[in-house]
Image (cartoon, rainbow, N blue to C red; front, side, top):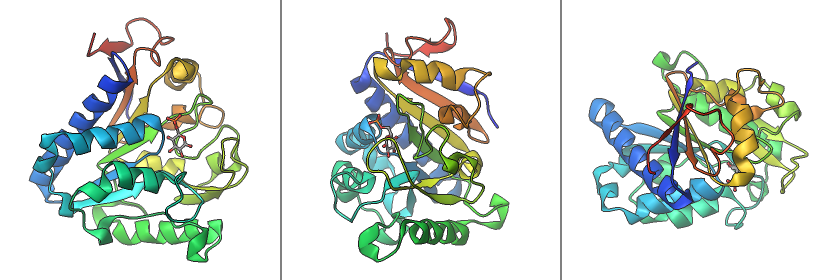
Length: 258
Ligand SMILES: O=C1O[C@H](COP(=O)(O)O)[C@@H](O)[C@H](O)[C@H]1O
């Protein structure tokens, strides 16, 4: 797994625009090399603001949208169209504004599908398994970029400190008893996160500063500090605003937008 690099931007607005620019560049690079690319989305404030920033920039036209696979790191187990679903926010901010292939938008299904949370998690695991290629050497694709928001409690995706989901070795899991509403969610697990080539943790705001410090500490474990387990196989970035970076040791973060 890769050692995290930290990049600090002036505020949440600049952060979202800078992450949007990074995503576009990365997708264009991967598509130039391989034809298609994969992006794992997150919910949350910076995650959705980043998608809106992609939609707002003319550079979005550089991406070959029909050749992009969209996945989610987690989803709140709520019916389609519910405003609290990560999918709903992503569709409004970006997905409904670009020319994606609907078959490549891989949604985690909610209760309106008739499935239980466990069945939905199993269905997503199966979709991932089918998308995995021999060169991925495992049951999930080696995603090109996985975006992960982070809560003040250091949760990433829907992996909350001490929840049984943090121990799970399947690729996708149903999460019960989430301390942040709603209580039932679907989440990728650590083995799936670690299979991503690049993991980018995005966080803004003073309330995240303690969790960021813990996530970057070598003394933290992913059971109690899930963001400490947010690591990609080739690259890990912590993309922060100044407030979220306020408690990291001096010299760790590179100030990109003073
Ligand atoms: O519930 C969730 O929260 C996190 C972080 O959200 P934020 O609003 O504090 O930025 C998010 O990354 C995750 O996808 C989502 O389901």
